[in-house]
Image 1: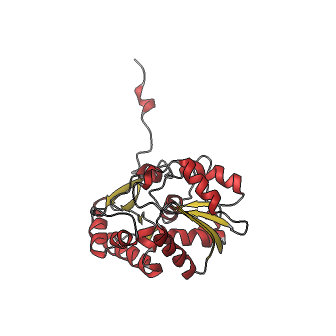
Image 2 (image 1 turned 45 degrees about the horizontal axis):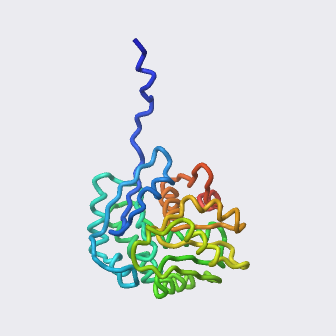
Image 3 (image 1 turned 30 degrees about the vertical axis):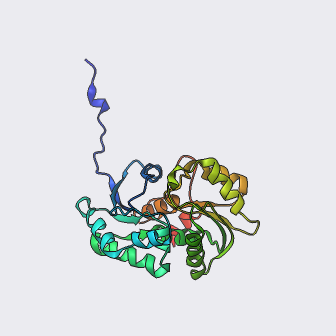
Length: 252
């Protein structure tokens, strides 16, 4: 008879948990999971569904205080160590104070440190020392303009912008379209390119585009995952990707 004891792991420590407040139309949970170490689990809750197109009105609705609080309370049973609000437009649409209001509401409900995707972007830009960047978005023009203002209010200069003009089904955009969007957005004086929207697939094109463009390519899910892991004292590391400057930021 084989000795089955050798197949039983010695370490039975529970996973560390990051809570995720997702917008109702988020379709890319798996992309966030790809950034997680083996000992970290994501506990996900979604805001209530509203049949709206993706524009500034929908983005504002996603930040509704009562709905954010109700969704965040769904996570308290699993006692997350940190919580992320995984939506870019829903957190930048009402400016920096709007983003802070969302994370503050989540913290009050979960008693865990919280961060929105837009705040995570600002943290990543600070870690990398980036003041001039290009942005690539899937959004309609009015929503992209709100992102430009959000960055300007934080002292960042947007030197190039490209958008797809989409108001629905953003998770259906193929990698080839997004890669070309990033190329068009990039400018010689951009220190990095940010690809907005947690519902836009980007995971497998980050490293190739960084090699091609010779600069950091930051994405919404990437900075969200990094900010959540940072609050657990963990780095953002995958087989071929690491957020440059993360170690410096974590020591600061």
